[in-house]
Length: 121
Length: 318
Image 1 (cartoon, helix red, strand yellow):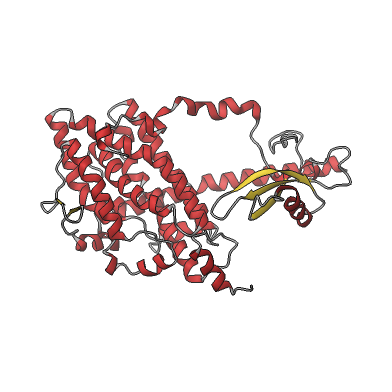
Image 2 (cartoon, each protein chain N blue to C red):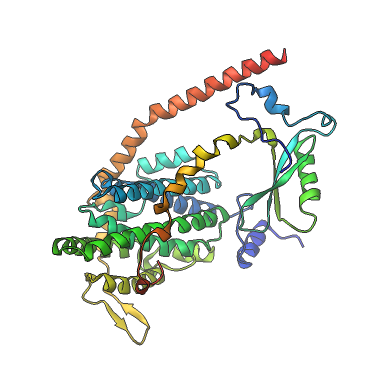
């Protein structure tokens, strides 16, 4: 994705004011804040993040999302969420967040030795 | 073509598509799903207790870490399911309240005690095995959020069954005492595991409507038969005896015949008089009450934090 990782709510410099318009960067003033677009490919599946776009309000964001992300029938449903509403994990903390699970192979079914004769389990 | 909401709902079902939270649905469909998904969620949460009972007494550090990971998974499964139920318009706190006041049920299997370490093996093998049989069928349920939660849960559940079977393999290959412990656990859990599939189809009040709505895809008796067919060879491999003198292969039907479940016991436990009903619910209510200060502190912290940010924001803007 080509946009900045949203600032986190815990950041010292983060304010409600920032939350409203942090996605606006120089040159964006005329096109509104940024929105994250989630598309459901077909019934029964989850909405999956497709990308983002600018729009002055939610209704316009939805119309823009339709035009930008579903022109080839990619979806049957679209969500738009203000980018400022996203609280992201800190990439610098990725190691401490996720690495411990790499050392827990027993959470996976393949860790257990089940003889073939027993059949699928 | 302009379809009525009712016809549109039916058309989605007929096409084997999923109903999503934003779709119109009959109130009965919504209430059935709330009841079923909440009961499923409560079962995951109450289900942490019988196994939690053995975390501090697991025979090795390895078994202990595995058991903790498994109980943690049950908590996670409960959370997926509560979130799925919430898409139908019921709040999570409300579901807790309904459980705590006895108006929501959970699976009766968790009203049996875990008396020995072998019970951890048998719960993984039989109880989770029965749950998987039921849940694999539910991945095709007609309500989207429930079906997606089931897919996620089934992926994680395989570890649960395998770790249980591995515990039993270890016990069954061990000393005579260890084997006896495994056999005793099988004796106690076999029939309650068969009860997990619920009453016979012709005595199950919700089955017909649930099948018509495609909430339920396979009937209680068919799922029970699937489970028996799958489990008997696994028992033979372990060398344990399933406590049913009528259990035998039926060449003609291509399935195992098995004896009648003690339905009096089933209904007795459903109605609250199983060995552990009172203790399980008391523990759950106790955990909720004891945890109140944690929830309150977290909310107070969030409110304070939010207030500080607001004033900082206002100051910055001025």
